[in-house]
Amino acid sequence: MNQSKIQNLKAKIFLGVDGGQSHTEAVVADENGNVLASGFGGASNHAEHPGGRERLRNAILNSVGEALKNANLPPIEKTIFTAAHFGMTGVADSKEEIIGEIITAEHLIVEDDAPTALFGATAGEPGIVVIAGTGSVIYGKNKRGETTKIGGLGHLFSDEGSGLWLALQTVRLAIKEQDGLIEPAGLEQLVLNFFRRGKIRELTNDFYNAKITRDDLASFAKAAHEAAAAGNVVIRDQIKFGASILVESVRSAVKRLYFQNNFPVAGVGGMFQGELVRKYFLEFLQKEIPGAVFIKPQFNPAIGALLLAYRQAEIEINEILLTNLKSQVK
Image (tube, rainbow, N blue to C red; front, side):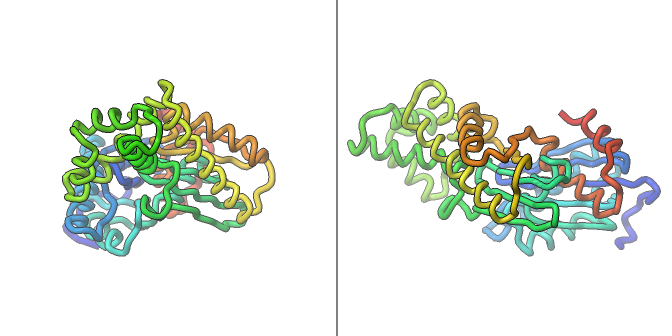
């Protein structure tokens, strides 16, 4: 243990971190489930890409550093956590290495973000979580501890129902509209207005030349959803199709985990904030998997990571602890 780090170990401090494609959230709390503060940083995915290691490092330093500062605790270099759990999008060995250089903890775990999302959504109970943010993935765990993961292979190969997927589908259809391959539906103008370009070719060229990022494209999903809610049938059909694929993936997870009746299915991520996504997903879920119970997540993935940090330190996740958390977390 780094001797330059000074902290009274009797004051047990726990850390949960959710690192995603759009932002990173850190939560620090005491052993009784009292949240001391939270902090935020930038995206922490693709550490293997050029500049990725530094981006990840900054995301951790900013999010955890802000949380510690807001909690009036010592800075990262002087803090020893009792347990710290990181749920990270696109886990790679390099992330564990980088995080291990920044964070000192008696118990430190770095894994992908799906288990933390499920643990937060169900407060540790068996079930299935559907993550639909910039990307999408389905993850489940049963009473026997068996797990399954479906999707989550990135926008080139999967991720149907995600924000980036919807954005790309809408741009693709806008190109077809521009080329006269489909009937006009206002898609071309919607894309041009959002990205402030005169032609779609300018948008695609800027993307290929790295002037527009994947996150920039994914941010278009909100505008696409709003257009669908306002009556754009073409985009609405895409949202409906994406929701159907997510439910098909849930059905596959149900079969693999041998769920029968009254098992929870939670939806997390920015796409589930959209009314149409929730509407169509619930309709397909009730029709295709009547034994599933669609629940509102009890906690977000960052709190899920915090709960897993408690478990690492063999602290019982009981009703008192959960009640403390619920009283402080929106």
